Image (cartoon, rainbow, N blue to C red; front, side, top):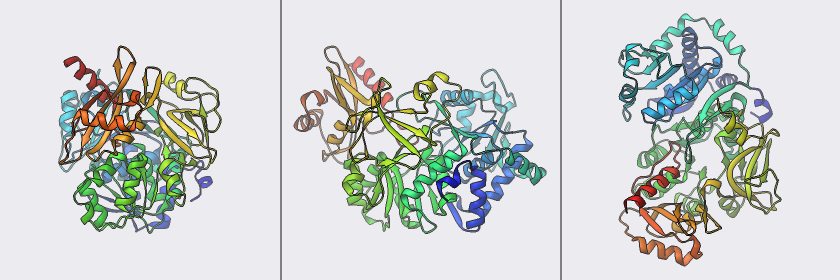
Length: 538
């Protein structure tokens, strides 16, 4: 399926084409078992008819709060077919955060699941006890009117997902077809809340054909086909899951093995059991694989994959996990994961140190971080994108939209990068992750890269710490490898050997558990807040 074929195409149309082509083949493997394309469409269409019976129509917002289970896929394709807007909810969220997302998105329905690892029911009752008495909408939740639960038991105040699927039989296929015919590829399909590593999440408005084209880019970069078996722990409330994982099978025919919650040991077992040859993940995922005692004993056949990590971790994965066709593509929630990528046959050095060149139909430019001027090759600045991939903005947030999107269609990423004479983009870091030490800009990524070379260091994050004389100095959070020991003085001394004096950390805080987004990114702003508390208490 070519990119131009997807311009204006709906997700439902892409699923229909996949059913015609792959039919009885297995497209996904969930915790509940294998899911064929035929069964996916049959169940999703019945659920779509059930939503229509509830009065859900094009443009209505429906929140989905569960991990990567088959029910998520059914709801995803059902809502896309009738043009309703899905609102994925982070499974790590606490009650106040759930309330924020539901109210910010104006979701009228919430679909959740009784899961073995999460007690969503108790969290909901903690915040909204009266909703289970049928008191919806109410003052706290003015838009929410129905709770839908995927469960084997009946729960008071909730409509069962299976009941809704069964109720769909009372709605004719003609009614479903009429609703589907009103949906276009330009319609918003999802409010994807940004992962919130540095700020309160914003709801990026993503549309149907761009979601398909974003997934297609990944398929083409990895040269995926029906022969491939793709393992992913990416959560579905993040674009890695909601776009790449959900849509890759219907575009390429590959088999997607989904892990609902990341666990490195179980992940390695699943990769071995299903003989996965494709892998995708963020740096923390790969660090867990590299340090897991089962890695060397597993019979893995990994050949190619995506890694969102620095050059040091990239090289270790290349050497120790044997993934020789490894790339670090670059995209964002707001670009439907479109952006830049290397080719699988680019040199190892290029694939390790760059994030590649623009994907088809995507314009790339470097601008002054605090201005509009475009900068030439070789000069670092803010990475900006334009093209088919750009979000329609942030829902109900015109000020944030105007800050990120200009009237020429350029989206400001917040990332610092430089385009080489060869056209490849090299990332320097996040603008908000630059530490300003006495007038000198220090990239957190540079310090972290040095620390990962220390034999005892498993993971490290550098942040800016307030200083009366220099405005900011460097502080680092460090997780040590199992069985390893190191002192603050040793870590600082190691950095002094490899970094200019102004880049050397003044404080080291050892940590065993990181504040994470569901996508596997470390939440730096939480670390910064905790550092402030540490300093106050010392």
